Structures are given as C-alpha cells and as structure tokens.
Length: 343
Image (cartoon, rainbow, N blue to C red; front, side, top):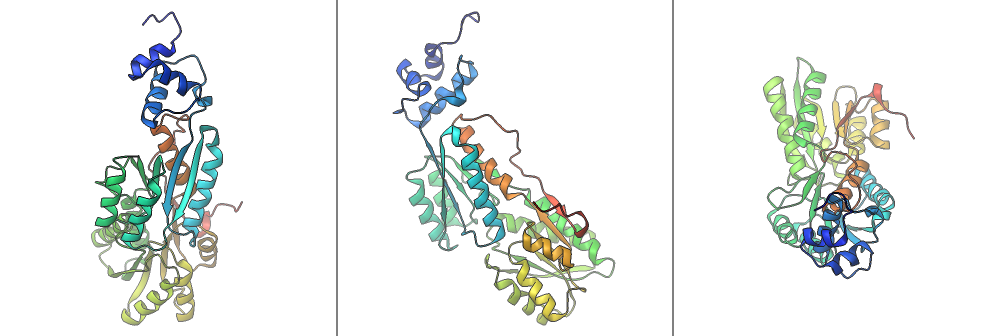
C-alpha cells in the first residue's frame, strides 16, 4: 500500500475480507451487517487509520444482557448503579445494558435465565456461582456471543474475560489482618460465606485458612457456614456459632449480612471481644467501623467493576477507546482511622 495516499474503504474491505459494500454500510451506519463482520471492519479501519472519526460511526445497537442477583444487598445495589452509569457513559457507542435479576440462586434457574436472555443479546455479563449446570450453560452461550464473568470467575467455560478482584489475595489479606488483630493468644475463628460454590468465596476462604494455618497457628478456623447470600441469616449463624464454640474470637464474613452479625454481637455482649472482618464499604459497614463493631473492611469498587465489564464487551466489538482500567480491580483496606469522606 502506498503510504502517501489516504486509506480507502477498498483497503479496509481487502484487509477485513469483506466487500466494499459491507465496509460502506458499517462506516456510514446503514446497518444490516452481521456483528462479526461489523467488528472486523471497525478493527481494520482502526488499524489502517482510515481518515474518519470511528467513535462517531453510527453502528447498530449492541445489547448487553447483565445477569445477577436482585440488588437487595449493598454490593449488588452498587453494581446496579454502576451499570446504570455505564449505560450513560457509553451511550455514544450505541450500547444498551439490560439488567435481569435471578429469581433465586438455584443452578437450573440461573441456566434458564441465561439461556432466555442470551437469545436476543450481543454479549453477556454474569455474576454466578460455579455449578456444573451453570458452567454447561455458559459454555454453550460463549459459542455464539462473548461472556464476561464478574466478581466470581467461571474458568473453563471459554468466557471472554473475568473482571473483579484477586479473591485469593483478598483472603490472604483478611487472614493476615485476623491473625494480627487476635495476637499471640489466637482463638477460634468462624468464616461466613455466601455460597461456597461461588469460586470467589471458595478462593477467599481457602486463602484465609492457609495464612492462619501457616503464620498464625494459635488461630483455629472452626467452621465455614453459608448464608446463601441472605443477609438475615447471618445473625442466626453467628448466634449458633457462639453456642457451639466457647473460644470464638473472630469472624470473617466473606459475603453479605454484616448488620446481622452486628446484631448478634451486641445482643451477646461480644462486640469488644470479637474481631469482625468483612467485605464492601457500604453505609452499613462504614457505620459499624465507626462504632467499633467491625475492625476491617476489604472493598472492591463495584462501580469500577461494572463499567469495566461493559467496556470489555465494547472492545470485543471494536467500539470505544480503551480506558486503561485493569481487568483485575484494585482492593482497598479500610479501618476506622482511614475511612474516606462521604460524598
């Protein structure tokens, strides 16, 4: 190609392996082009630096199906707000973020919801636990459209990307904090997971246990119990644990329900004698840190996760400019003394 002349639509057509008419339809926003060809045309138009603003190309609308739990807990509420922000931020790239909430966490329900919503979608973002039925459903969908896993990964499915924190690192940090807070005397420790089938929860639990076992042998993890992502159940689980384990001095809450644990600690007079470490800086966890009921909170910025996951789908279709945000979102550690100001 003669570098002294401008790139033409014919050059893009040849490089992308499509007709001139296809390139013309894509770059002039006339529609009627399959998403795979459209993506290829935009990719080569960028590579060849055709003389036009590709971000303003009026391509067809992309429909992204976002599947997650109902936003009844602060984390999922923040995720919902993050996706609403992403919808507004990326509107110029003609993307529609369509939120669908699971009726329950049964694998068959998740799979059926995924199968139904993916029929009319160009991409899927999903927060789901690892179960053979779910893995099988995702593995079939990825053969047609890209899937991004969020917060908890589903490896082996062929998903496009995982967006979220390093959950093993989070568990190791929680383990070190627990060990240091409990000190040389150690004590019994309870882990409260949402669902251990969430790979992220399993990774946090395993890494937490590993650090205590290796570096703080005076600390004994006596059990991992499941709240099933039900915030109300954590109070009952906490009360049951104190009845069963007389030496209980620490609780690591991997999932939702810090307020339920706090209710139990207050009622049992165990606030001052129990170390409580949890996840996500919310209005509830902030107030519990200030009160001294919680000792540390690990936060993973769900707003950033939501926006980044939508961007991954857009980049798959060669739309928009990369923000430079990492797929692995940063983890922040908050104690009573370093809480950020409220908005």
